[in-house]
Image 1: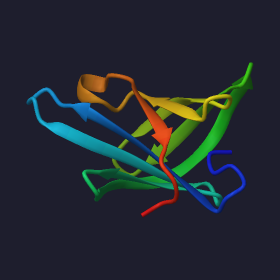
Image 2 (image 1 turned 180 degrees about the vertical axis):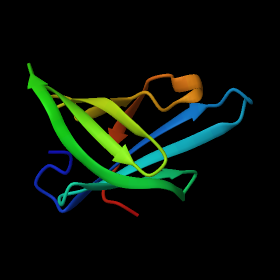
Image 3 (image 1 turned 30 degrees about the horizontal axis):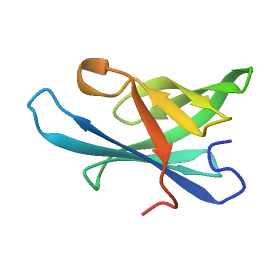
Amino acid sequence: LMTGSNSNRYFEVGYMGNDGAWYVSGLCFYSDGTFIEYLDGVQVDNGTYSEVSRGNFMVTVRMTGQAASLDGLFYETFALFDLANGPDGAVIAYAPSGVCP
């Protein structure tokens, strides 16, 4: 689902934190249903992901990690992934950024 036809796929987003600093968050999805989350290049969580529901080119994806579990929305047409893990739980939009580090 999240890797397309590849063995893995990396999604990334940059955002400004509440402290005014710039952060880069990354999500590496693997075809075996696992993921690794990065913040500024450092691994901060890992776990599994699965499809919860599907409709009109949008897929709800549940990410169950060691630190947190969240549902995100994957837009198949644009390959964008919205997840509420920004500052204060804000939704941020991850875009594909190649293969995993």
